[in-house]
Amino acid sequence: MNIKVLGPGCAKCQQTEKIVREAVAEAGIEAQVEKVTDTMEIAGFGVFGTPAVVVNGEVKSVGKIPKKQDVKAWISSKG
Image 1 (cartoon, rainbow, N blue to C red):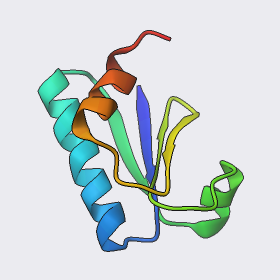
Image 2: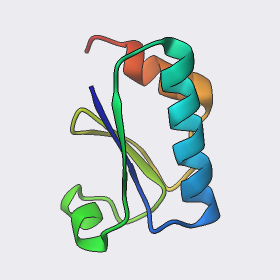
Image 3: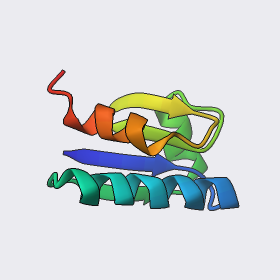
């Protein structure tokens, strides 16, 4: 599983990355969490608001800090 946290490094982006890492640890799932700060790479996902979360290439959240239970639902679903 690959999870990307998209954002320039602002406080909201840092909080989002922290929540994602905690959710992965608590769910006990093998996942690579990557922080993406390059604006061109972020735009390549069609995302123009940050923070954003991408799970296995699918954009799950844009422009807000996700709730930990939402992140757990995204990473535990087999969809």
